[in-house]
Length: 253
Image (cartoon, rainbow, N blue to C red):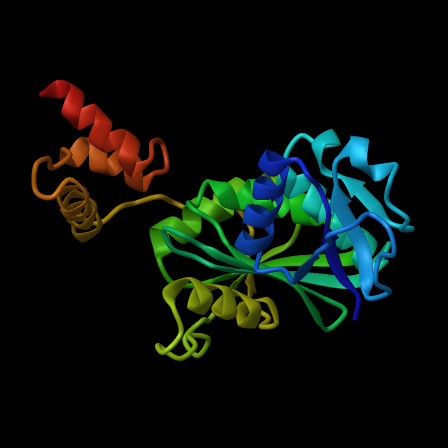
């Protein structure tokens, strides 16, 4: 299978491209010259100015996109050569740092862990553009109920069928790092049918969930601050992030 190539002498751009490729866990080859591109390179990521020097069929000028993530998405689309998939399943392992995986026509296309539940909708919106299909389903694990419901409610406006999947048997070996486990679980969830979501879901935090957020705020500030129950409730509902809640608590003092 062909892979991505990276060529640029712009150090800042080079750093941003590699950071994004590593975040997405994508294979790539660093090219030392714009000429004689190896046959195994399917797409070259570069700058607009340097693209004129490169003797390759498929080029993505990263600095012409609004973000490096979008440029890499386009490079992947060119690399796979797929214009329309028969079906695409997007799996989500819910949690404070959700794992997301995309499976299209029996092939794992991408897996990633995002930084917060609020990032899920933006990431999936990108994936829907990147991997158009005749049939698309979003499947999410049944655990982390409050976070799961927040994610589902944010996805409903996309008008893509959403299913809640029993994720009991999806957790991979604990020998893996947490990030990799969440991504692998999302890939399994993508392939499991579940119950269809019909409407927005309730956000009813339990006392235990509120106390857990307060405990987490103490842990992050090494015991210096504990956010109030009211602020913890805002965090659980996705109205503010935990870091924003801690800053709010600091400003009171």
